[in-house]
Image 1 (tube, rainbow, N blue to C red):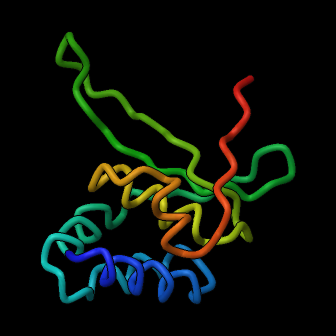
Image 2 (cartoon, rainbow, N blue to C red; image 1 turned 90 degrees about the vertical axis):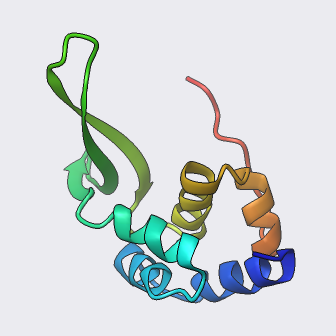
Image 3 (cartoon, helix red, strand yellow; image 1 turned 180 degrees about the horizontal axis):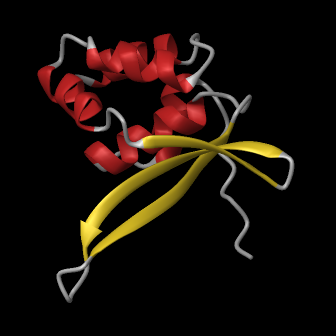
Length: 116
């Protein structure tokens, strides 16, 4: 995918309101790599209320060193956050595009999360 195409896709995705819409749009993308990557994530998200916030998690099951299946949970964003957070996560996890680059393509400022 050319940079201009990537920029157009990211800007279009940022007009959508929620993660399911973004994922569906990505699954229908004409770029086969993007479409297949999005399809591979289908059914791997969970919504949970934690500390009064509705959080969106990416949930996977993988085998550990002993061959025992473990569930891994990664907090992606909170419900109601700007979808650029999900878009940037998607391109980083699936295509190794730095989050800062995706934010720049969207014309948004990326703020590095504080470490705790």
